Image (tube, rainbow, N blue to C red; front, side, top):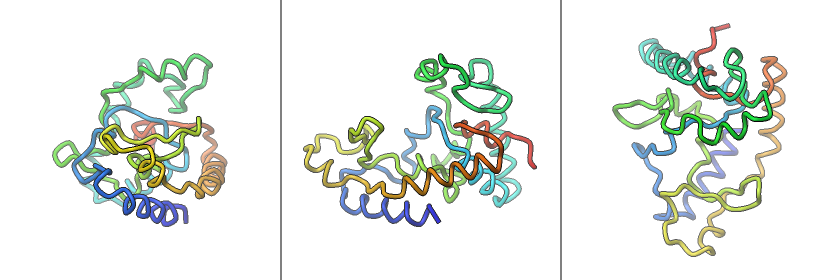
Length: 193
């Protein structure tokens, strides 16, 4: 129920953004470097993996496990549960953590997402102008190059779906008994239930 609303908001901002938006299949700069995902996103990725063809799912699981192995040593959280930021100093440590790590769902040959329909909210919203927690407008560094501020503001993505996302995250945390953000590699390398 969230994704159709989110996808409609993205379609609207994409149409208004026109050539200012550089995002297209194969552009995957945003797929390099880890970022937190919610337990709602983790559940959706696991469902997408379960529905994927067996050979593809095996490739993704192998990449996810290899990524998890690389990330575990300096993981800024609990490396067993995959929950980030379990201690106060973890958030500061995350700024420099795994900035060169490719997403395990990124197809290394095509530069596209192997679980595109199940991709996390952040993947669905990265690129166009989006309000951040400081109320500033954030955009991908490849987009809106030399655009006047008025154009960036005109193309801002509607985020009225955020309360629904928050309630879905709370429900997922209740279902999984895992509270807090994780990483894609940890979400996809958890033992199947």
